Amino acid sequence: MTRPRFITFEGIDGSGKSTQARRLAQWLGDQGHDVILTREPGGSQGAEEIRQLLLTGDTDRWSAETEILLFTAARRDHLEKTILPALAAGKTVVSDRFADSTRVYQGATRGDLRAKVDALHALMIGREPDLTFVIDMDPATALERGLARRSGEDRFEDFGLPFQETLRHGFLALARAEAQRCVLIDGNRTPDQIASDVAAHL
Ligand code: ADP
Ligand code: MG
Image 1 (cartoon, helix red, strand yellow):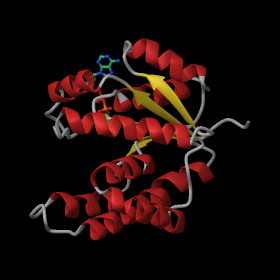
Image 2 (spheres, helix red, strand yellow):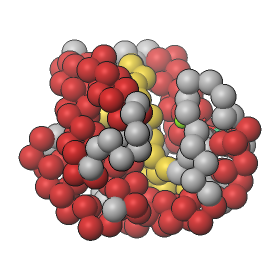
Image 3 (cartoon, rainbow, N blue to C red):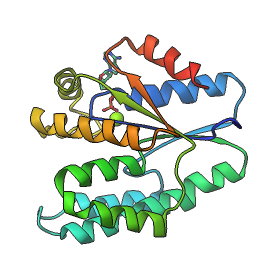
Image 4 (tube, rainbow, N blue to C red):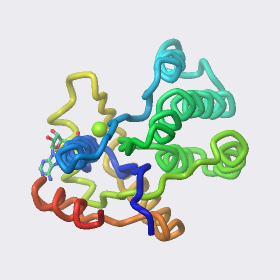
């Protein structure tokens, strides 16, 4: 296989995605690769602006369907403005979350809309990552980590342990369904151990 150049990290909140995405981008850069680190939600100016629309106002401001259209619009902008230009320039792209997060979150909260998410994605996004690291770990520990990190611009929302469990199973099912591009990573280890495991897959 040719070297993967569009690499994403997925998993529940607090599982170490941002930590490992940063470390992998650093490591690839040290190896002499031209690499950009990006993330969702956000990742381009337009996507950030759309994100603000989703974050402000009443919780019932948008219907579930409109919300999915906004997520998709934001992702399309991220893809067009950040990801595809970098890939075309020969760079490696490491993204902290991408489409799989929407699939799993919408599947967990609005199961009946999962088919629409998939159809919209096929129509308007199309591009899947070459390689996706799904970090799997104990949801209670991940929740503790997330709560400890609550401040700062990397928002953490406490949806509670049962929901974390549901999301975890959503990510596990997705990793199985998309086994050709997904690698399951045991997140119940030190950051160094996880980073070496990730690097070993490249
Ligand atoms: P995510 O982006 O998946 O929500 P983060 O990378 O932000 O997770 O990690 C959540 C918190 O846990 C951060 O404070 C981070 O420093 C810490 N952390 C990350 N990986 C580990 C690990 N392997 N062991 C212990 N703490 C970790
Ligand atoms: Mg994060």
